[in-house]
Image 1: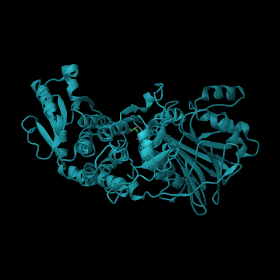
Image 2: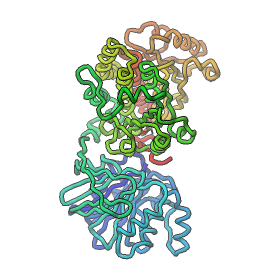
Image 3: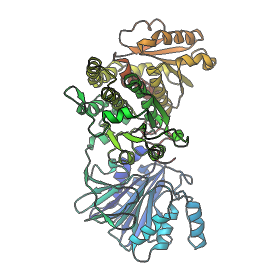
Length: 608
Ligand code: AGP
């Protein structure tokens, strides 16, 4: 999705803007542009395609003098990806340039109004109405023009505005789209994502909905929608520059797969003290937990599948019903949610539009909301009643890996914590499971080490048209995520099925050489899954089984076997997913795909 950056200071702005935009490339985009203010003139450069084209056009920014500017990467929504539709957009009088993330929902009515008033539109974008509204409302006071413009906009926006009359200033405004201000010394920044700021400053101000800010090289003033200044806290960015870079790996995805033991350890270890799970970021007391009658987990994509894996652990240990709902469905389903519901919201980015909307809907119906989020200060983290951060560090690859495994790990922690608080688990089982959970980072490392040769297997399983992923119970939850990983980065059609469902229809599709990835780590129902392997084998399928170390029963049934270390069944998803992430990665590599930036996908889906 789109990304924005801005700078005001004493250095040349263009190289800083271009570097910032490069850090946002991972979000997915199809065009990019910058606007730099120099001697009261705004110079705009924008191109379709990669930021490299913009760097080439501007000689890495050296050809653009000026110390104040704004930049944008666009992921087309309204209008094709063309140079004209790329941001920044200019006012007719050449006085203002604007960059925008989000969607202006009432842009058609605004566009008609502005055209009638004589404003000329160059692009097909929703954004262009913003710059013409500012031009219309400007009478020498940019702050007032921004207030009046914001009041006319419906939808979501993070805006950056420069004006030739106020050559040192940048204005920004936020509504339902992330916006972070970077606090420097004699220079200041803004961006839609901390990864664009972290090379320049670690001091950040997270803007809230409805706020706007005036940024000069020496000051940042944040205002509420009425234009009154508000006190904002300066937060420290803890992510290091290295973790936002590839560090010698060919792709971010591979780096992030390898980082999972560290990410899971950073997420769970600080929350286990003296044999107890401490979730002191929350107020999930025994009284509260015993007062609820169900838990609803909501999320999108992989985060939803993390919820599917977590459901088994929570239901098994807490004996409370857990519903896992796709956020895009939940929000429109008139959900049966009230003050006796705990809503758990999972999101790596904390900015997924559907998840935010579902969460707000459930909050309005009285649910208590617990967010499990990776990005500090994100909208979901700020909106929830309580937030448990997954300390995975920045996740750059579009396909999530460490985001998923850390979400699952937090749900495991929560399951055990809640079971103890609700008095649904005896001390022995609690202690045994806690000891087991502590070994999770080590087991994930073993799963990575045991599968270093998976690239060879990928040579056999690449180039096919479709794959089936099957499993039962916890294995089924992993099959869902395994299939998503495969399709999103390798472009192979991959379907996941509860293994027992095959015979109710899907088995009709199984033919000679059809690859079937069979997950068999759940010992309790292994015999049943083995029967399903036999069924698909009888129809000519090529079966790749995933099972725990030393389980040789499967070897004689399957064509190929991937082993993972054995762990308590309810915690197995975080381990079992590792070879499937690696398989998807290496199949995508064999298929020649753009692994970190798969086609049509964006890292953070900030539109509905
Ligand atoms: C997973 O690899 C995808 N990139 C996608 O399904 C993602 O998990 C989903 O869009 C949710 O994102 P979030 O965790 O940032 O809310």
